[in-house]
Length: 285
Image (cartoon, rainbow, N blue to C red; front, side, top):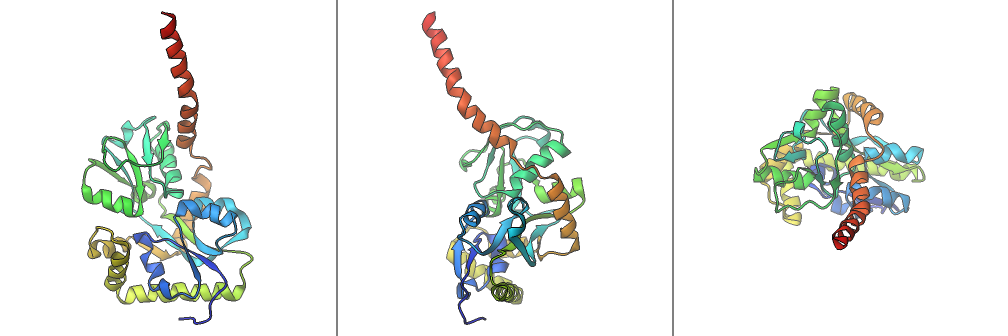
């Protein structure tokens, strides 16, 4: 472990899929910044983070100022079990449907839009943030811990793993995020971060049960230790050539804008006007 403190802020994803990358990270000689994937773009634009995992949808947009940190990232092929669409009815029946979207997602919501339109030929309806966990009538896209917990509840008759759906459609893995660093970071600090990640992965692989147990003690999620260790086997953390093909397909296919959010925003603007018009008609009777 490095002893000299590095003058960099490093993004820390605390959700369970990322445990292997951060095993022993409390001892890293850096400033760790807790964040979700949906918040990294803003942190990057504000200059508050130097090295971090970044959703590929954001990385595609950020240009050459953010460079990949070797081949570190997270990808999955055929199944993820932590990036899922849960629905009370078949996906073919979700034409123009309202869908609830968890707050953390950046890339996955674009993957879902591409699947609904490109694979299933469906129209996009309003998509809304802030999933109500207590109701089970609205289809919802959940990722990471929320997806793992919802799978355990077994409330929805239709569960679509976006990794499997994408692989059936495009024949490549899904890459949800890559580790990146800002171009201004000193090369020696980049190299030190490479070593920290490699050391963390080595510690995890030496004793995954201990790594997951430590994380569960700190963050108190509900799944069993064994379930999360099994979940990690779905992921590739050192991305290989096949994942590079997946990145190329995602860059070509993923939409820049999320239509469902645009539709929901438009509805929030026009609905009050409709209500006022209806009130006026009622008054004239």
